[in-house]
Each structure stands twice: as structure tokens, then as C-alpha cells.
Amino acid sequence: MPEGTLHIVSTPIGNLQDITLRALDVFNTVDEILCEDTRHSSRLLSHHGIKVRTSPYHDHNKERRTPELVSRLKSGESFALICDAGTPGISDEAFFLVRACRREGVPVTTAPGASAMLSALVASGLPTDRFAFEGFLPRKHGERKRKLSALALEDRTLIFYCSPYQIRSTCEDLAEVLPEVRVVLARELTKLHEEYLFGTGAELLLKLPKEPKGEFVVLFHPQGKG
Image 1 (spheres, helix red, strand yellow):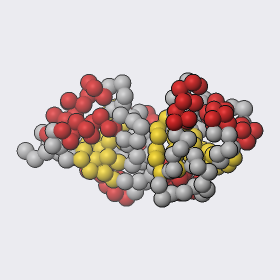
Image 2 (cartoon, rainbow, N blue to C red):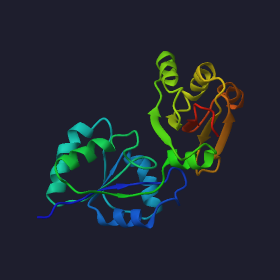
Image 3 (spheres, helix red, strand yellow):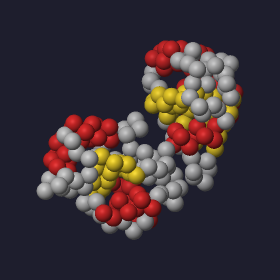
């Protein structure tokens, strides 16, 4: 029996219309859709009339489920792997399954689409010729400041993800470690309340609401370009 294929499928980061025709075609042809959160993804799938079986694949069950999924792929089943928003494998557990498939020779392909970091980058006004995605900054002040200090000499645009609970303290650390660097904060991308904020860390502290909402993309060029 021929092996199945793992399809890495990008989903919208906010606007449900930002789904590709190929992604919808993949959803309708696979045996199962692996979701970071099945309840969250059900809204997107229902919106587009997708009735394929779903199951959870996330950080808390990846080690238990991966051997089973690889075995099923090798027996001929095919899966679509999606995350809550954007492209799977960017700071999430999709990497774990993809690596296991590659080690076992299971075919892996992508249906590319939305990505929060790329959407924020191209609309930020910062240099796009060289950039680096650094994932999430450390949660603790001391570790975060050390990380920012280590990146101070970078000659690329740097991109981070940040939760609304950490964005104010992150701006405080930016104001202390990189006081002259202009920062871009992007939130609610592609949604009704999409917003970009610009300024130094200190200036952004004055612009942020008391209780920020939505996930943030934080971008800056340590050498002040842009």
C-alpha cells in the first residue's frame, strides 16, 4: 500500500476569507485534519463547509500521538496539519511531527498561506531584505533583557511574537536596553481592529492601552534602520 502524505496547511490569521483554494481542496481530500485546538478550528472549517474528521494534535499530546500518526501515514492515510492561526511549525508543535515523518521517509508537503510574522514585516516599513524570526522572548525581565542585549548588534530586522500580558513589560525592557531603537507593534492582523503602533519602547508605553488585547508581533531593527 502506498504511503500517505502529511499536508502542512496554512490557515487565516484573522479574516476567515484568507484561505487558499488549495487549502480547501486539501481539507476535502485528506482522511483527517489535525488541529491545535479542534474547537477553535471548527469555526473556520464550518465556515467553509468542511466536514472531514478532526482530532487534536498539540504540545501536550505530541509525544503520545506522533508514533500512531506516522504509522497511519505509512499505511496509506493522509492528514492535514493546521494550527490555530497562520502557518504550522512557526513556534508550535508541528515541527515535532514533520521531523518524525522526515526521519521515516513519509512524504510532507505544504499548502502555504497566511503568516502573522510576514504580514507584519511587509507592512512595518522596516527593512525586509534581511530579517530573523526569534519566536517568543523570555517571560522573565532579567532573561528578556539579556536576550535583547545580545541582539543589540544585529544588522537584521528582528521579529518576535508577544502575548498581550507580556507586551507592556517587553516595551519597558526595550526602553531600558535599546532606548533609541524604533519599534513596531502589530496586533489583530487582518481583523476589524488591525493596528500598528510605532515608536521607541518608552513612546509605545504611552500609546498602549491599560489592558492590551490580541496577540502582538514586535519588530525592530537594532541598528536603527527603517
